[in-house]
Amino acid sequence: MAAQFGRRLRKGAATTAVAAVAVAALSASQAPGVNDHGRQTAADATPSPEASASRGSATGNSPYYTDLPPLKSPNPSPSTGPGPGGTGATEAGIPATVLDAYKKAETALREKKPGCNLPWQLLAAIGRVESGQARGGQVRADGTTIKPILGPQLDGNGFALIKDTDDGAYDGNSSYDQAVGPMQFIPSTWAWAGRDGNADGKKDPNNIYDAALAAGHYLCRNNWDLSQQGDLDRAILSYNNSRDYLNLVMRWLEYYRKGTHEVPDGTGTLPDNRSDDGAGASPTPTVPGTTTPAGSTPKPGPKPEKPGTPQKPGGGGTTTPKPPTTPPDTPSTPPPTTPPTPTDTVDHLEDAGTGKLTAMAGDAFDRRISTRAETEAGKAVAKVRVRFTIVGDTDTTFTGGESVATVATNSSGVAVAPALEAGEKTGAVTVRATVVGRALPGLDYKATVTERAADALVRTGDAALTCAPGGEFANRVEVKATYKGAVADGVAATATLIKSADDPTANVKGPYFKDADGKTVRTLTGLKTDAKGLLKLPELYADDTAGTFLLRITTTGGATLTVELTVAAAATSSPSPSAAPSA
Image 1 (cartoon, one colour):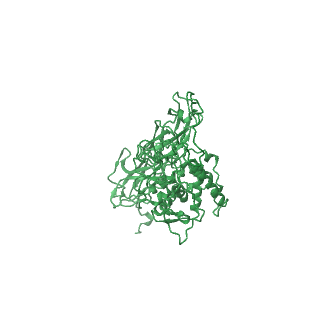
Image 2 (spheres, one colour):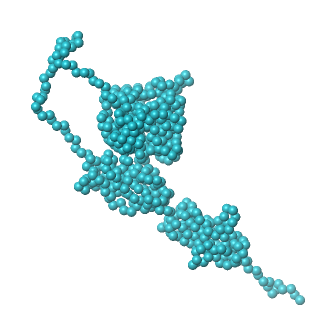
Image 3 (cartoon, one colour):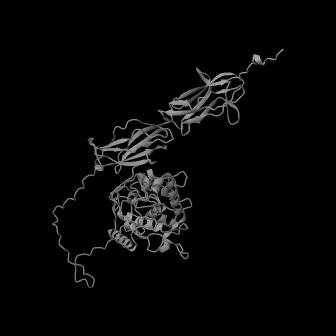
């Protein structure tokens, strides 16, 4: 399912303004410049124009906690004890299971995507503003939250409008999407970004190990290097498209970089303020199936006074109703209409001349998927985001190891996906193209991954292969496989001692191999060429039958090589006449 994008509509402008002032005050109170590790501090972190223009969102731009880190040093003192509602050093305490999940995610990303340079403190900063470190560590031993954590339903009422994309599978809401779990993924994003971080065979957005690993992969896509400020800005903004959000996450990131410590699960501090002015209301543990946004019930406003009712003392007499400024029969001015965006005009997707998609296992596909966005009349639409998703059980990926890529259409309405890299699993692969922000049918592309193959085999040496009856061949057979002149590595091969050039069945006499138990075998299967395309066969032995024999080696792809073996007794020399005894 395609992830949803859109501008975030926020309630409580007054709260946001206060938060912005607080951020500015905090910026002024902390020395700008570069810290002792050479990193740029948050006070100097100005988002690049490209970062500010980012429109992606893992959370659907849901509300988040706006509490700022304290000015007090996060390094804990021996007398400081953790506890809910604490300040200062207790703010740096992260519940044990949650902290473990962040660090394990960093380790996994260091192996999978070393160029990303993801620090676990970034996951901690996002986890703090999204769920208050999973509601103060209310998680079980396996990392699953004790109660589901759901954001308000994204019904367009003060928030983005994102209609249901998962039939309520993740959020229990079959009408609208809600952000789910410790890292607050919306269901449509989790559908492709979800990961199994605790190796239990499930991808659960309510599990901190799964959610932290998914967040790490999400932040590391697009070949971003998070040690570079520009890429770091882009990654954070792609999580929630808000400059206030970026500044807040950067503050917590720098705070956690200065020091943190582990506290018992369930004893972490709880945030108080949220970006939608619903203090502490969301994300809130919620029972799946509810559709009312947690904590989003509007507060009743003051009741209007009746005309002519006396005011309270000091009010200056009675209240006189004001005459209407517009006559009752005057037609109201219709609200201005918003012109449709390019995405709004897309009616369907068409193939843009992709062609046949076939590659051998481990190789890159020589063709790339091209998709054109069109209106109902068949006119191309530019500047539309098309998401390409590899679906099904396959290890084929796009370049960089991702299974999802989003590309904007060019002036011709065409989006070209990154190159596909075939995995080791052979068979059919489906790549689905969808329009981001529109509930339109996807366009499926079929690709095929074939077995590794070779079209040529040659011996690496030319020494004669001879042996005396009942003996062992002095030289082992080694061959090299190629495909179109290039090394053919990992190619399956079979070696058989055949009866004759015209009869490829296995011989019953002559040379033979030995299996692991030392028994005679004349056919070897399950062989594979190494990284250099080489295949070295085991030792060959001979029974008591003399003669010329044939060894045939075949590979996937049709390459065949027949090698001649000779079993003969050593020639005996007769004595010369001069060596005969004299009379």
